[in-house]
Length: 95
Image (cartoon, rainbow, N blue to C red; front, top):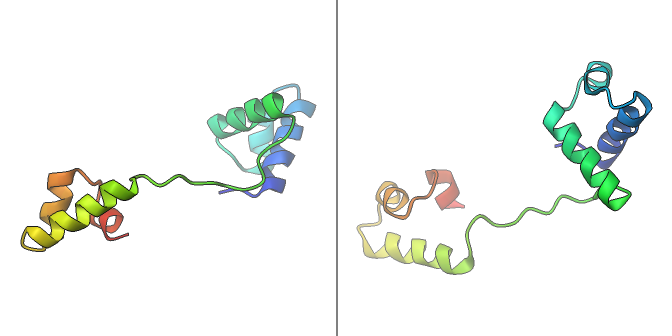
C-alpha cells in the first residue's frame, strides 16, 4: 500500500515523462504498471487522488451471522464451515 504522497509523485512523474510507465517505475522502484495506470485514470477523472483507503467488507453482516450460526449448529468445525459456506480461508472466517 502506497501513501498519497507516493502515488501523486508517481502520477506527476508519469505526466512529466510523457506517459512513459517504464521510466517512472525504473526511477521510483514502484509501482506496477497496472497500479500506475489506475492512479493516472483516477487523477484524470477526479483531478486528484483519494487520500484515504476505504476497504469494503467482503461479507455482509447477514452473511457473517449465517457463518457463525452454521459453525455453532454444526459440530463447531471451522474447516467444515469454510468448505460449506465457501469462505476463502480459515483466517477470513475467524475475522
